[in-house]
Length: 316
Image 1: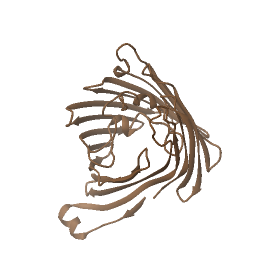
Image 2: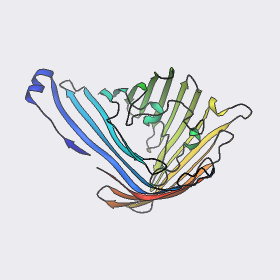
Image 3: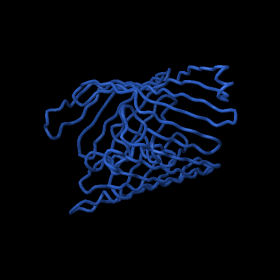
Image 4: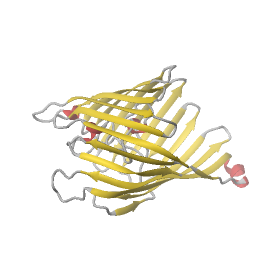
């Protein structure tokens, strides 16, 4: 991430600011992507994958050590038929932190999306994360089971989220509240996590959404030598639909480092809705230096469709 530092003697004198800076950084990727058109809709099965994200963050710190942040995102992305569109500047998110306490407000991630405790996504497969360990959680009406699960992004935001996280030693706790003003939906989430001496994290998160009901996930994640792993188990009221009760949802992903530059990833996600197929995939990453990575993968999604991609991604 590139940093542009702005310091002003007058600013320090009048506002009590000990330090101020503006950071600009982001990620980009491009390559080929394949998505099987099982429904024969005529949509392009093979497309040029292309995305760029730029995050702009302003940071200030008072003489007392209270850190303040504000950020927004710019983004360019393609759609399923190879159209390209840009978004931004997006709605802003703000944060204030001191010691072990951090409070985020605005266009920010909630407990589940933030990864403060539960590793919801795990190790995605391929250039674009074709499938993730939480894939079956996204099969109700094409959206997340938890209607508001999500977080900071480009473009406008219809919801305001407030999230507080407190960390003391190896223990952390988070609480978030999201109010969506377009559909009058409120959502509350809470998460708890503890890191063991060997680096393994044990965590749990619970949420309640006005339209989807309650849901929860427990997670174990860590590493052992060259192997990184993450496992989630959970359930949701929304998995039970008329005429068909859903199943306990599970997901697991691993990342195995073959060398200092090359790693392979594997993912499985199953259960959930009775209509959801088990998703699984296999991928690889190879570091080319300078923050550039070659990545690709192949997967089957929860609709039994084949997915594949190959390309490069980099950070700046």
